Amino acid sequence: MKSKNVILIFLTLLTNYACVNKQEQGATDASETLPNIVLILADDMGYGDIQKYNPASRIPTPNLDGLAERGMLFEDAHTNSAVCTPSRYGILTGRYAWRTRLKHGVLKEPNNNKPLIEEDRLTLAGLLKKFDYHTACIGKWHLGIEWAKNERGEPDYNQPYLSGPNDVGFDYFFGINAALDMTPYGFYKNNAPVQPLDKHQEAHTFPLFIREGPKAKDFSHPEVLDIITGEAVNYINERSKEADPFFLYFALTSPHKPVWPAERFQGTTSMGPYADFIVQTDWTVGQVLDALKANELENNTLVIFTSDNGSFMFRVNADGTYPFDQEIPSQSFYARKVGSGLQDHSENAAVHGYYPHVHTANYIWRGTKADIWEGGHRVPFIISWPGRIGSGTKSNHTICLTDLMATLADITGYQMQKGEGEDSFSFLPVLLNQGNGEERDPIILHSGNGMFAIREGNWKMIFGNGSGGREIPIGENWEKPYLLFNLETDPSETTNLVETYPDVAKRLSGEMDRIKNR
Image (cartoon, rainbow, N blue to C red; front, side, top):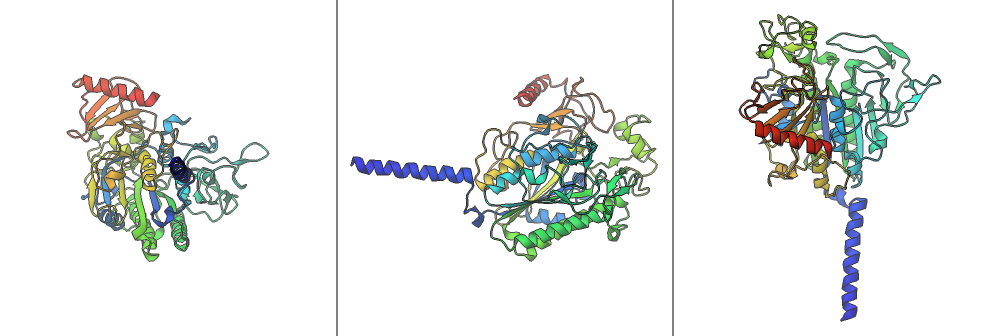
C-alpha cells in the first residue's frame, strides 16, 4: 500500500513538473490550435476617419468597415499616450511609457537613439515566441535604435545598427526608423540598411511636411506605404507554407505627415490629400486581408486594427473662431497650422483641419493628437477572430492598448510573471462574450507634454488646467483647477465638475497617486 502511494506521489510530481516546464518553455504543441495574429497599427488615424465609427464621414473605408462587420468594434478604446513613441511602447510591453525615461514627447534623432524597450523586458513578440510563433515587425518602428558610430561619435546610418527590433523579440524586421517626417530616410532589413543613405532630403512644409536629412537614393516618401504593404503580403504568403503560427506587427506610416498618398490615390476624394491618404490606408488593410484569404488563413487568424493616437487634424470653425468659443493666440500651434479659419483642408491642402460639416477626424471628441482630451487618445479598435468573436458586434467596454499583452497571454495560456505587463489587463472574456474581463485599475492617460489624466467608469479627471498638448489653452501639468468630466453626460468635455463633485475628485486623485507610485 505504501509503495503504491509513493508511486502515485511520484507520478503527481512528474505531471506537475511537466506542466510547469511547459508553461516556462512555451507550449510546443500550441501551434496546432493557436491563431495567427496580425496587429495593424495606423499612424495618427482618428476615431472619426472610419465610416463605421463616423456615419457622417464621406471618406470611403470599405475594408475597415468590412473588418468590423466580421468582428467586434470597440467604442471606448484608448492609447496610453496621445503621441506615438510612448503609445507603441505601451502596446508592445503592456506598461505605461511614463515609467521609463521618456516623460513627454517622442524619441527624436539624432540625439536620442537609445532603444526605449529594455532588452530584458517581455514584449508581445517575446511572449508569442514562447509558443513557437514566428514574429515580424514591418513598417514604422520609432522605439529607438542604437546606431553604430562614425569616427566623430555621430550615428552612422550606413552601418548595421547595434540594437533594435530584433533584440526585443522580433525574428524579422523590415521598415523605417521612425515617422516618415523624421530622419534617416531609408529602409532597414533586420539591422542593416537596404541601400546606402548617401543622398540629402530637402525640407518640405505641410502637407508634405518633411525634415531635412540623410536619405537613400531610391527612397520615395509617397511609395513607402506601398513598399511595406508588399512586404507584409509577402510575409503572409511565406508563412502560410509553415506549420507554426505567426505574429505580424504591421505598423503603417499613414496618415501621419507627410500627407503624401501614392499618385493613384491623389484626388480620389474632394477633401484634400488627408482624405485621400485615409483611402489608401483602408486599401492597405484590404491587401493584408486579401492575402490572408488567398492563403486560406483568415479563419485561423486574429486581426486587430487600431491607431497609435488620435488624428492631428483640427476642427476649423467657418467664422474663424476656435472651437469652444476661445480666443486664438496668434502664435499658438492652432493659429500657425489653421490660420484665420476662412478655409479648411478640403479647400487648401496647407490648412491643418476641417470644417466640422466637411469631416470630423476625431468624431465628437474634443482635441487632437498630443492632447489629454479624448481626441488625443480615444482611437478606433476593431478585432476579428472568426468562430470566436461574434460578427458585427460592438463593445463599450473601456480598454487601453496596454491591455493587449494580458489578452494575448490569456489566449496562449501564458501566466505573466512579476515585472511583466504591469499595466495590462485581459479583455478576452469581452471578446468571447463571457463577461467584462479581468477587474482592472482605472486607466492612466498621458498627453504629449506629459499631462496626466485618469479614467474610471464615466469619470475622467485631468491633472492640469488645459490640453497638455496642442489645443489652447495648453495649460500646465499639475496646475489647478484640475478638470473633472462625466463622459456619459458630457462626451465633448465642456463642463468642469471638479468643484461640484469634490469627493469624486479626491478619490480619483488618490487612485492616480496609488497607480503612479506603485
